Length: 159
Image 1: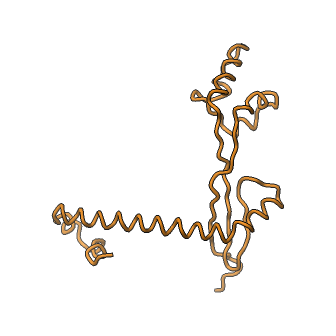
Image 2: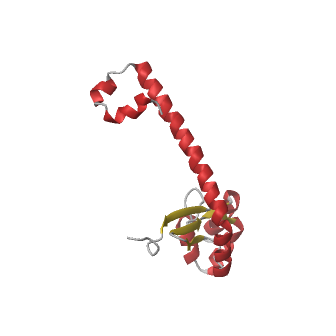
Image 3: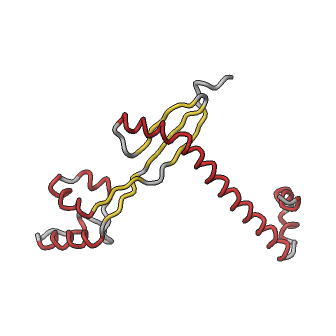
């Protein structure tokens, strides 16, 4: 980081805004480059964390018979939280056909699905099984991108 960039947070706004457009552009470009470096470093670090904990998290998920959601475990002074969100997609062509069938049966398809033919997971889960079965051919559930969070394990922290 350049000395000029390090100094801007201590610089009066009037002094910073008095800089030339070229000087400001140079600072903006430097900030953008640092942000990109930070993004790459964060992704690399998150990959290392996932590599370290994927087997432990997978074992816990298998043991709990839990494909999605959160699992937590400890690694010394660190509490690890692993999340695998659901990534739900709906086949638009099939949902369109289902909407037509609902219409033909005298019902309003919008009481079952959103206008753009998506279905809220929580709503789907509350339907009677016969309605769920009609929609299942249009449903695809896959795992979203796993995420890991590390936090201090309060029990291991020393005063």
